[in-house]
Length: 382
Image (cartoon, rainbow, N blue to C red):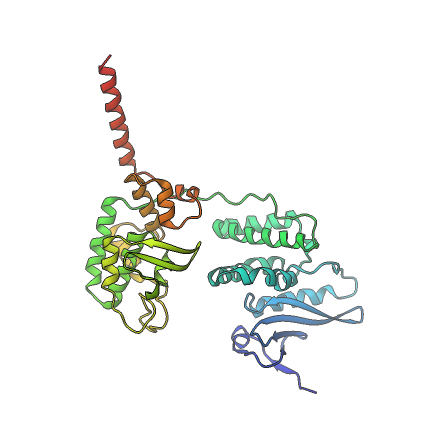
C-alpha cells in the first residue's frame, strides 16, 4: 500500500506540487482531513475527509488556484463544527464552493481568456468563496447577498459590481443544473458608475508630449515607456493590447491584433504611429515592447514613467485608460461619425462608444456662439 503523503500545506507548498502519471493527494499535517488532490493534467483542488453520523464523507472545497490555504482551513473548521451532534447541514444540494469548483468551473472556464480566468479567480478567492463557499446553494438568501454586497460596495463599488455579476451568473447556472428555482442575486441593482467625462484637452496633450520628450532622452527604459504611452494616445488601443503587442501583429499600415478583449481586430495606424513602431529595436524578442529583465516576456503593466509625467503636467486625476477616452472624444469633436470611432476602438456596438464621446466646455461654448450668430443673421433678415 502506498504511504500517505503528508505536508504542512501553505500557498507556496501547494504551488510547488507537480503532476505525475497518476492522480495523488497530499494531506495537511495541521488540519485533519484536509488535502490537495493533484491530477495528471496539472489541476489541483482542495478536499476534506470527515465523518458525520458514523459515515465518511468527502467534500470538495474548490480549485487550489482560486483559494488560499488559510481560507480553506477556516471553511474546514466550519464544516467540521457543523457535524457535531445537534448541528444541521443541508445535504440535498452542493455547497457554493463545491458547485463552483465542479460543474460551474468545468462548464465555464474553458471558454474564458487567460485574463478573464485570472480576474475570476481573484473575485472568487477574495470575495465569493469566503462569503458563501461553505453554504449550500439553497441556503443562500437574498438578504444575505444584499448584506455582503452592501458591505463590499462601501469599500469598492466597482469591484462589488463585478463580483455581483459573477455571483448572479453562477447562480443562474445552478438554476439550469436544477439545484435552485430562483436566483437570490437577481434584481439587486449594481452601484451607479461615475460618468466617463474626463479626457485630455489639447493643451494637456501638448504638455504630456513635451514631458515624454524630456524623459525619453534619459534611458532606454524611459524611452520605451514613453513610446508605449504615445502609442496608446495615437491608436486608442487598450493598455494590454500595446503591452503584449507582437511583431507578428504589426503590418505596414495597421495592427492585426490576434486576441483583443473583443476578439481579433484590425487597428489602422496613422503616420506618427507607423514612425513610432518603425524606430523600435528589433531583437530576438517576439514582443515589440519586451521586458527589460526578460526579453522573452512582454513588459509588465508597471509603467513608472506614467506617474512621473502625470505629476509634472498636472494631470494626476488621469489614468492610462483616459488616453483611450481622449482619442474617442477628440475624434467626435473632429467630426468623425460615432460608428467609425466605434470600429476604431474595437467596440462591439456604438452605444459603448457614446460613453467615451464627450465634448469639452470650450467646444460647446464655441458651438453655442456659432448657433447664436446664425440665429442673429436670420433675425436680421426680418
